Image (cartoon, rainbow, N blue to C red; front, side):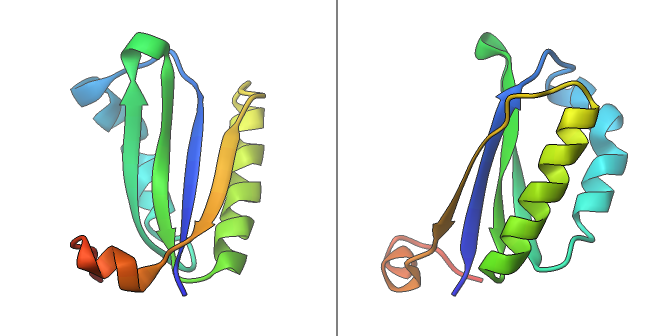
Length: 100
């Protein structure tokens, strides 16, 4: 079974194309995380929020990464991290176009 980790937190930029060079090293590091299949980076400049949607191969790695990421954000001065972990209903998701 696969798991989705949904994370968002207050963020003041940079946004869009300007975020790429600022976060490229972090993105490369995240790509190496154990159990990670993919991450979608999310941003909402209008509400000053950023985060991501992650797909993990198992719940244990999703939980481990959430703890690591929350600590990293705390060290960067971001105390409020909103996060949820969901199991993927793969049978229904495949009907709607999901695949690995």
